[in-house]
Image (tube, rainbow, N blue to C red; front, side, top):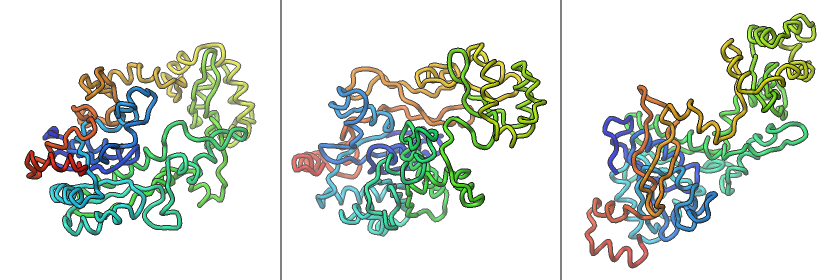
Length: 401
């Protein structure tokens, strides 16, 4: 599939042998940045995410919302890797590829005869990235792992919620997403290496732990066992979620200057003179009393008004918004974050999807093609590899594609 020749990853070809989220999300980031991504899916089934999502009708058509969210801009070929002819096709694809990404359990690709040693032996410059729940080695390497399993194992659930509600799962697939971002980052770095060629082992567990720097370091360095803090920021006060007249607001008065500005704006300069709130440690120790004092004033006005006023005086604050509300907000709608696809195969209606979470030189990198139907590009890809129409027909009739 053609990509923008000026994009950062223009000319890079990625083979996406992944399912559901971590791997597809990693490859989606690469696609937004200009890479050509060929999605290799199981014959007759495809990515499991094709049958997942909140709209049963779309899932029944193999274009589930979970699939649409992570696969725009990719081409799709179906391939039976249990058939020797399917493995030959993969090897021919690898010969002209820069990156291969898979998220099977460790050892699956080796058992199919197309593991990293074999493929990199054929194409030494190949960057082979394997994403798994716990990594390719270690006592848990063979365990199956979905996002919630990793959230629990990483300690994320143990520190999410408060003392009454923890452990709680984070409200979106945190581990899958962080695993995917870690993979995309590592692939981007490996593409810059000379000579090219690497085996990248991404553990979702380790990827999540790496993002928990403050929590992990409080234990490793400070000897402090992490605890669930609810909506309170354990490093400072007043810093957390506070009730306003209509809705909650987040306030992060993390410096003494911000604390004084907050108290004065709320007409409670007297709190600055109270010895119980004199220092950061005092305010942390008495955070619940301080919350009650501040909420006496905050509950007199709507959250959005307080957020605007506090931000104006340099106190970080923001209303707690719903997903629909923030997606409709001018902060998002004015920055080209949502892409619309009018002609998605088999849908008959437009679909709006999020793009890359960064802008480069004032522009949002993004794909231009919609998510593909299962095997939509099989013929084109095989023809590029030198297969003729009769050979393709035979491969399809015999279940190889």
